[in-house]
Each structure stands twice: as structure tokens, then as C-alpha cells.
Length: 272
Image 1 (tube, rainbow, N blue to C red):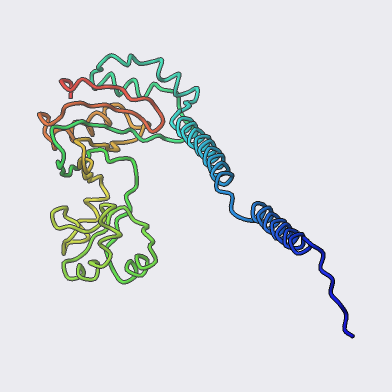
Image 2 (tube, rainbow, N blue to C red):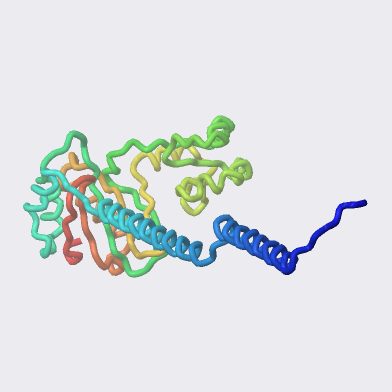
């Protein structure tokens, strides 16, 4: 005889309930695990906001540091000699040319022979020309004539001259260096007398103090070196007067002179 399976009343219902309970426990366990390992939108959003706020604070700090750095760079600290020179002159006064030159030469001496500079505000931009300074600029001008040796140096980006001369026949070889020479004002130009067959005469002429003048590209301003502080006062005055005569006095609106490391002195244009 086989085994007799005895069924107790209600036992099947109990087993069914236990299975359902076990199933619910498994589902709850899975939900808890998903809550831990799965995406948490609200938490992520909160972290994102905190990170964004932190980034903003970092960016703000960096911007503040950059602004402070820029402000610090703009601050110019002048030495004692500059400040002493500034005390000698009246910033609200326009000096005669003679007195302005005298003031510049009375400033404390430096360890080198400073250049004297003329700064002009003129009627319009685009003004240019040249003038032979009667006493030169005090700087030995390096004048060379373009040849194959010069071309070799230009190929390497080497410029060891102040004025470059060329014959008309040699100009085509210089064309490819226009971007190198042009911005520096060194490209030979017939209008400036730097393209010529008479190179020997041109060397002599430019070496004696021929000065080119032109305004800044976008502003009616000129900055010219007109001699050395060691020049006699009359030599500086005559150089300045030669420039004004070549430029045309009616075109001059303002004039200041200074040395390399000195404050500027405003000149009364009526005295030019």
C-alpha cells in the first residue's frame, strides 16, 4: 500500500500565505537594494547644486585674484630721481622751448646718456615725412645695402641694422620679407629715398641724421628721439625746430619733451 498523504484543513491556505509573505520579503529586499545602489535623483540634484555653488565661489575667487593682479600691474612705482625731477617742474605750466630743454637737462643724471624725446599731438593721423636733424640723434645709425648676405640673415629673422637701402634691381628679392620689414618701417621705399642707384650718397645722408616721422596708426600722435641729454641746449632746440619746420607748425596741437626716464615737460607751442 502507498503512502497516504494526509491533508489538514486550512494547511494549503497557510502554505500559500507563507509563499506570498516570502515573495513580499524578497520584493522589499530588492527595493531596499535598489534604493541603495540605484539612482537617487533628489540626492544627485542636491549634490549638483552644492557643486555648482562651490564652482561659483571658486570662479569668483579666481576673478577677484585676476582683478587684483591687473590693478597691481597698473600701479607704477617711480624711483627717487624721477620723483625729484617731478618736483622741479610745474605740471600745470607750459614752458617756453628754451626753458623746457633747460628743465630736462637739470634733472638728476642717470648711469647712461639718456635720449631726449619729443612727443607731439598733431592735427590728424596719417601725417608723415622726413627731416635732416642738424645735430643728428646722437645714435650711430646702422645703414646697410641689401645683398645676398643680408638676405641670409633675414631668412633667419636677424635684423642688425637701422636703415636698409636697396637698388631697384634688387627689390624683387626683398618682396618676400615685406611682412618682416614692413611693420618695423625698414622696407626700402623710393619715397623715403631708401631705393636708389646712388647707395653711397644715401649711406652718407642717412648716417648724418635723417629722421623719418609719422603719426601712430590710429592716433594723431608722434614720438621722436631728437638727441641726447648730453647735447648742448642749443643743439636740442635746433633739432626740435627743424622737425617743426618740416612738419609745419600749424599742424602741431601739443608738444612735450622728456628724457628716457624723466617726467615730461609741456612746451608752449607758440615758442616753437
